[in-house]
Image (cartoon, rainbow over all chains, first blue to last red; front, side, top):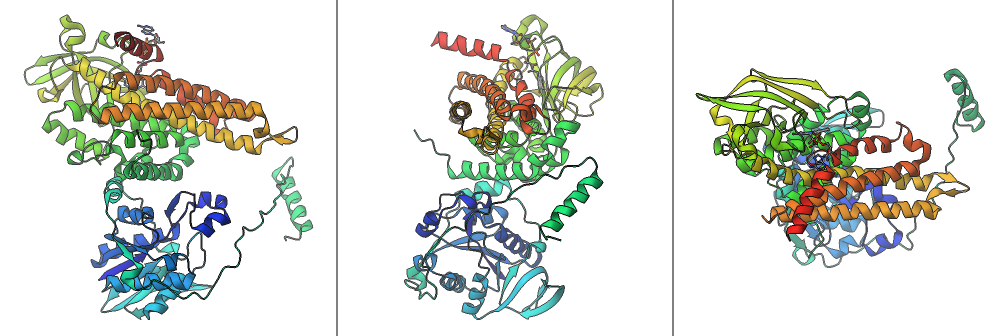
Length: 259
Length: 380
Ligand SMILES: Cc1cc2nc3c(=O)[nH]c(=O)nc-3n(C[C@H](O)[C@H](O)[C@H](O)COP(=O)(O)OP(=O)(O)OC[C@H]3O[C@@H](n4cnc5c(N)ncnc54)[C@H](O)[C@@H]3O)c2cc1C
């Protein structure tokens, strides 16, 4: 069995507020780039599927040459191999273009049974790429998966949560699975893993190899701007006793029509 | 000349930083208040391979270079001084002498155990009557058949009471002064090896600092480390390496104080302005940042020389002397920038100030380091 895990390199969340629209437009973001935190759950699950079912795993990321820190993080965690997909038309395109390139890379990799992804990226926030990938591949899609119960006889059994409940579903392979954070507790990479990964030569798949020199785009950005900073005011509720403080807090919340 | 970290060094720094900020920093205040040794943190560090970072792979380590190791010490110390010092002592003072001077069998048995994080190591040199004057030790080791018998007392030994392996310096030939000292490997639980109480201290409260007593403590003859009567040179070399890590402790502590002060200066308002608008505050921050940067460069220089097998005694002494005293000034100003809040135990800077104070004393006081440097520059 082979598992492909889709990994995005995103700005460190602590530095996200500093990223400017110009940087996003040019694609030259100055922030420290790390593995998208949601993708760590997918990478961890890929490793665990290796331990449980002997699956081999490959991490796939869309990015410019050299943008391999996130892939190396996945390798250091224990994912077996990595692949960088350098397709300009996808990097600069919309969600659909990204999905097109990633799906093509999965197909290029061959014999993949399961594609794992995080629930969204902390910069793009669309949560739509995995849907596009499943669509392009023509595979089944399972979202918000909190547990992969079993994979046997070409069928995956998984638990997923939805508003108000939890369900157990079965679905024939191949399948695209987007995982929820309840699924596992991503490990820290070992320092030995980090050392080895930092020296790894990561193969690059080009647009030519995938036949994706141009990808039609459905969405065009007319403008890109930062949301206005919200002005918040801090009010410290004072009082002699906890009861007095609580009473004042309730009054204040009532006055603001919060409760 | 290239001032860039390589990919491996950067990846190691980033991961230690993340671990330190996510796991170590949230405990630092608790550790300081209670004096509890953060055992769980060290267990996790061991599992990740941090406790053998610069130890070669064949002995259970990761095989990283000294720059990476210094970065790791800096990041851990920026989160918690007690954790940083304990880590530095384990690595520089216990793992490294085993690596450099140990026999193959000793390395397999003791170094591998420490590098894999199965236990901590300690280094027992200082005695109640012999600190800077290390050649004046009084602990003795006498050969008796297949054993050495140790008698004496050690003082201020980092992790001494909790370590699995302690390297102990003792006089083996009283006639020969510094040339009559040898180092021994003593296992925890050896009869006659009695750890004393945890010393109450000004700072670094989560780092265990112990007296150690040796009363007819009998250890196997093969636990002599390296050459008989070669102990003095061994611990001088060990301390050279250790000084790079103590400098890195100070850099981490100073950086944490600086960053806290910088954030505070942006948020605290006085006279209708964030205090960061005042030139007096900006100048303080400028000096602090400059001194930290100078410390960093001295540390990297010493670490690179060490990795290249070049002499680094003077450079390591300079790095520790400067970094520890620079961090003292940085912490002083960080508290000043915080005003009254800087003096409060609710803010981290007073803890950092207390934690850093040791760095100008341990592994060679500033006075001793000035002597080391002075002697060398006069010879050049
Ligand atoms: C928290 C802590 C952890 C420690 N951990 C360890 C450890 O793990 N292992 C270990 O072996 N030791 C350890 N030490 C001991 C430490 O290395 C010594 O305290 C240090 O070397 C100084 O020795 P001393 O305390 O005996 O001071 P002394 O040597 O008595 O010095 C007192 C003062 O005299 C000055 N002085 C001494 N000689 C001269 C001279 N020739 N010229 C000018 N000035 C001089 C010193 O600089 C100092 O200011 C630790 C100490 C502390 C506080």
